[in-house]
Length: 247
Image 1 (cartoon, rainbow, N blue to C red):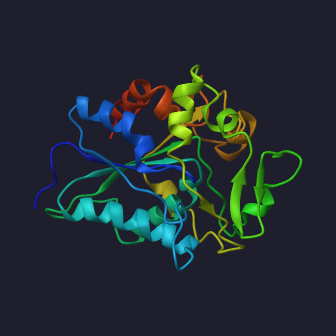
Image 2: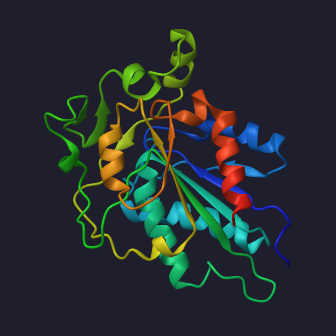
């Protein structure tokens, strides 16, 4: 099957978030003629057995390959913690040659990180490293679930209406602490066309930390909190469409 004319957009919100949180962005992209779908991290939402980091990677990998196998080029949009397993999924796609179209196959055409983390090769991922005085609002409880104090402030501080913010807070789901490991396997994800969106009002990943994580990459700054695809969906959609025009 030949690649579809317009890329499909796969959105993966960060921890605690669900596909419902991506709905404003999906609608904004639909209005521009793009097919968009959102996928929840395996580590968000109560499950049995307990999910692992590999499950998060697999969720993203499968979401992308499903669209590729349908003949769509794909733009992958990764928010917050989704950037970490998302980069690992792109490592796998890169090794499989899915950044290059061969014959009638489709390809991954761009990865867009929004207020997101990535880690260097060899880094042993452990959310406990992010705890401490610099992150007083985050904790891990006795059941090894990630907790956040003052969700209204941390995630939705750029929404002026408390009622609107509460609607989004009510849609959040529990997020698992994934334990120590694994080691980040490679930086092959850097071979993909990359767009990085950073957020000046962010209280979950402060701007200075975002600058440190994304040193060497051009940054598109938004005057927004941690989840700009809720507070500024049209602007985020504009960035996605503009990035795809460069592909």
